[in-house]
Image (cartoon, helix red, strand yellow):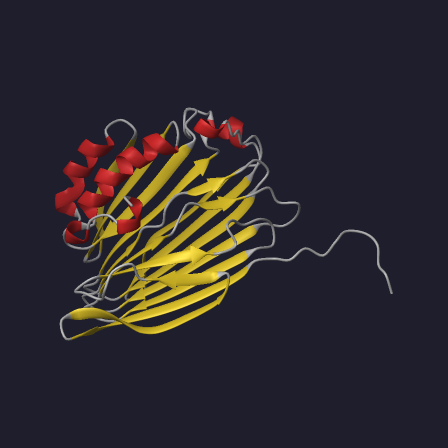
Length: 275
């Protein structure tokens, strides 16, 4: 029987799971699963630290698309996670795009979640979720950067919906939670002096661990007047939180490069950021 009406559109389903272990002085791949549009690649040989590049082969997301990444870092491991390119969120005819990231880290592990920027287009809709479970004594550096239309490309985001949800726990104790929601009047809200004063690009970085406090003043020097940074302790856990606002993605990246280089220590920037 021939049916008329709205076509049934194919949706992106991407699931990637990765675990690493520490063996013979190196962080090594333990298990890898990839399904649908999800692919994971390793640009350099296994070493004391390992870098993984997450890829959405669909080339972007729209309403109804779903991407999920799950990562387990065993005790003593060093792992940096990034993305192959900026994730693009296109106009949604209905529903929303969903991106979920779940990361666990064992004792004395160090993980860095450093995806490249997410770019929202006009009338897009995105719900993004970041869930982090850390063991006592582990460290994490977490970044999410979002661009509301690329100024150089003449893109303007008038209406969209964006919800960014973070939950970070250490030994089951919640140390950081935030829910950032904006829309549907993106242009009007970003123009407010208490939101972005007309800026189109924003970023949040969270660093946990004993070394975070000593990096507060150098981080503030990099950020300048384009955001702010603070440090405090929740129980024995120290955390440094930084927020940046920029006129466009180019200006935001210019600040993120030195800031991530500072906070990520010897691991530095993901290789793909400068390739």
